[in-house]
Length: 567
Image 1 (cartoon, one colour):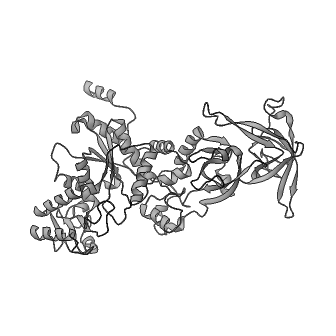
Image 2 (cartoon, rainbow, N blue to C red; image 1 turned 180 degrees about the vertical axis):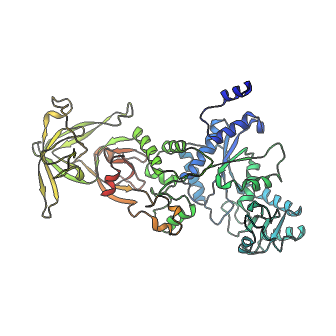
């Protein structure tokens, strides 16, 4: 190794992924005058999902890391599928993840005039032609990777005829699907994308920004690279499916660019998750057919759905850092995402009491009219998080599953004759149970040891079980929405012989009534994060009101996942 290489190696930042290494090398080499400009180019035809979050973290993150800028550019080249609602949601999602594009908000439609002029120039130079064939005929003539395609019978029209037809296409003289504009490249190319790709098609649907100005709209493969060029993008970072498209992008851009500047495309792997689909088409189907309650349904992998469910921006970014960026596709286990969410919520969520499957417990030796308060720590993981008070009385609720009449060995919860501690309060002992006519337990009768409260002589007495609880007289009823994975199979996309709707998990949403302590009701503001102790992490839903509290379970605790599944 030469001294120069040693010096370069020592100066290179550590821990860079392969995309960042490529960007760093270009900056060190002085390419583009040391300028760095990336872009995030979403189509406003649906809500962003967690796969887009990975791209957002890359596009904005690499610009932040090396002092560059990142543009937000909406790829609005298909007015039929686009909506202002999607534009607004995309902006909100990016901001929520912690990124900002400043004044660099652009649209592919900003460049429609330049793209149209370029198309006209290519027609005049004999590099593009109008084809009257249907899309099915064009596809049939494409050939295969081992067989050349068949040239269109309209391929050799004169530039004058092609230009006249193209202008008339944009004037609205022809119906949708009647004609397209194709690049004249090579029908025998080994790269299928070079076999006279379509550049423009007729669409007569009004555009959300340009109205009815245009009747022809550029295809993504024609608009993408030029839009990067017009904006001065230096690094066009995208996912692996665009690798075979890159030569075509460069082909078109070279009609505009010279040796001093050309956007560089770098590809990384998509984010794929178990028990999830990432297809916008399938997600839109779920929404339109009412199989979920909208794009922001907490079961959806959309960023808005994850936000509503109670995921944090930091947990998503931590997850993306964990799985990293590679040059090969992979299916990531959703448990990695769940771990990242638990880890972040454990750090910030307030500990509270909520009983999700209640049974009444009566302390027979506790005064009937007495109410005292016990002190609960808000978050032992967060220094300075403080404490709150919780009422304690003769009658309380505990989880029904925390009691068994005939328990197995190593059952350390409540049973006849057994002792447990009520968290933050007393040690109690089960003395009797009350059943209804069908034999169901409706009340558990216990005694309490008054010397076992904090500060009392028996406060440190040890018992093996600790239960959460709420005072029956002070408990507030709330709706708890228990969410599970949306699909019942690990890889829905691999089930090619089945309709993906058949793969939905029928238990993906279970609604229960939960008894919560008053502190929860008093602090159930939007965005609040709670850990219902021994149950899971919860957040108030958008539907929640002061008169009807609604909580979404963001994620269960590690030791309660299977228990909740069985309920």
